Image (cartoon, rainbow, N blue to C red; front, side, top):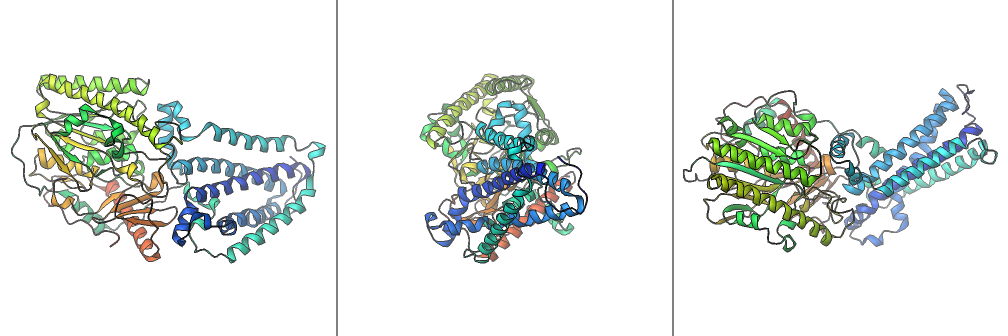
Length: 633
């Protein structure tokens, strides 16, 4: 590449520069437009058509082109003008190199976002890379859970084209040089006028679908920071955490042990289906249990869901950045109180590459994490931790020490089949893994009986979350919350019950801590939680939040009457009487959408401040305050 250029020269790229500059720029523009096409093809056209009361097929080519106008204008006018200014200021060589570097970065960024959009429906953020890399270190083959071989091959072709244009730039028949400048400039002017005309003649209501995909990709890389929270609001939120039992006191019972069996990626729809089969261990526990049939995870991401299960608190938008991992915060949940009372609390997690926030939370509760120790197959790691848990039960029983044992098997971690598998095949594979989980549960029950502590032990069976991405389940709608991602089994088995007690109103992972505390703990003491006992009258009509904006772009709530789903990226809100938005039309009232978004933003900031700044908890003496008003009436 020629370097004998001087500031102020604006004659365009040299003969050697022109071809690689133009090729890389065209590749970048095509890649960004491919991202826009992905957004529109997956859900955009369907949503716009539904808002207009039309069938998707009724949106003709001219209407569809309106959504690409801003990106075309950026690449045809804005960026070329910026490079011309840079060429005048810094020289044409610097402008050419900057153009090629920016173009290749946009190609790579567009590639990453095409994978993210195809899986979660959300633009990629840097924050998402850490858990992805941690999972790939645990399972190297999981790299292809995020990136398909075909997609990698297409990316390689694009970079080979750019490299070929650069290395072959001096060949005589490719040395077109400045002759490309005039046609390229004319094309840019033509496209600019067409894009500007399309924007001026827009017949569809303005929406986030009209935004520039390139700008959206860049802005999504950095997760938004939380807004400030006033001290009075924070003090009120801290006081509202203190929870006292208000449901009828159970009969006095002997001291109980507790076993948690938290499955990975099991949607309730699969668990309750005929495909799941007999599942003898699960079904036997249900006969003497509280069974919540509308139980929901707080978050479709394992670490965040476990945080809610163990602490009774909602996670923040980005939990790893909120929690003070260098500090000690003694969470006053049901598990924390049990540890204070001398319970031997151990979490048996087969994952060998540890995620810091998982272990930190367990340690704050007075527990200890036991992993598989050596990386191997998922089934082998599950087998090792179940064996360790069984041995722990025997030792605790022999020593007469009350215990809390949490087993977190991973055999059902998604994806179960390659992306695109039909739902029937997917659930058949999921059912096979569920039967493996049933066998693991049977081993634990047998160990309790053999140790002579079964009658004194409460077993909690649930799942961290359900299916989350289109890589795991092609039938998911990535623009809205999906019941298959949040609705999970919940069984609280107590041998003394002798019958099934169905809990039919919506419950959540937050509720497990207060439920166990009020049923089996020292209920005269208050604990800290944002949930309520599943058996309390307050559980029937309240606001329950479904977080997930960082993971897949959407969040929502149930306000006691209706379910809501809000997509941050699209700025759209859905409402339904069921946790199913497949046939729902986005809320048309802009004021309602804006008010809903503002309330969610305020709640996010408050939750961040609550978890980041919450002091170590002392014994609470204040009863729980009223639930906050729902964001949408």
